Image (cartoon, rainbow, N blue to C red; front, side, top):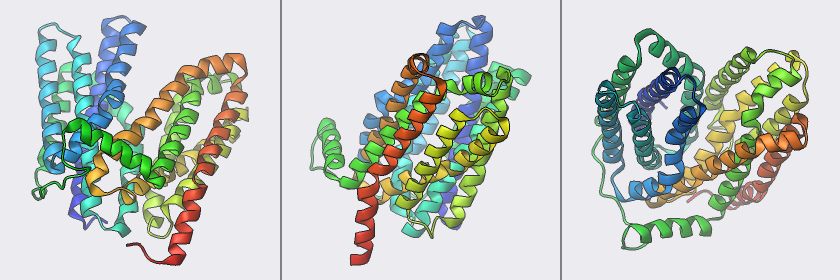
Length: 402
């Protein structure tokens, strides 16, 4: 896998980018809490600035990614992110700390143009037999920064302050841009959905997803799993307090345990990716996660909760890697940006809806009922895949892929 120049370059670029994002996010969070004396309104605005672009610009960014050359798009997105952080630093030095929120919003918006372009490069330059390993490596990278990102970001801010944190963030974004610039030049982009303007291409992308059965199935599965994840996401602290009888500080150990298991799972998936079909990997990951989710909600013993968290973390790369592989394999290169830009927000949007309902559901029922319901939703997501699994098996018997 590492012999592929595009995989090496994109992974290194994403490592630099993730480092910058985590350092920026935690520096902004800690600085704003210090400056506003833990004002919850301003702290919540940080999350809005970081996540709102996913809903506002994901499909738009994906459409432009299909119109533009992917390498050039990624290089300029990272370069402009570096410049935006530099501008924020200048504003901060002049007393304008609100610019931190604006800078986070701009940088997160630019990411919506860069990520679909990375998927296009994978589609175009990574052989099919390496694709699933590359997706697993990408998920492993996410797991690494889930564990190390908060630690690194907090340490740098507490040790060096907001100015150094922002300078380092800008340098990491710039480094990502320079790494990507080493790739060969892009070929001319093929046209898709007929000639036309931006909105015509955007609607052509939506019609393409609607007419593509595997992509429709993946969209529904991703949305259901996002809802299931959302209803439990804000309730982890109550697991610690109500079910395990520990204080709030114990939550960090659960998060780190789950993140470390994700890292181990990503490494394992890279080793077996060539031997297991992505749809089977995805379904197994969902079913195991469903059982673990219900078990975690029911457990009152640390000795039971920890192993279940390890198992669910270990299979998480199966879910993300399986979905991303299926998206790439079932999407024409000319539509890659729009498909990626439409399906990912389906997950995040439903997750946000689930998060908004979680507190109400817990008060109306119980913590156990919410976790059991989340597990049931994940099983529904797995069952939605059955036609796709059956279709793939039948296709394998009838002949090789075109």
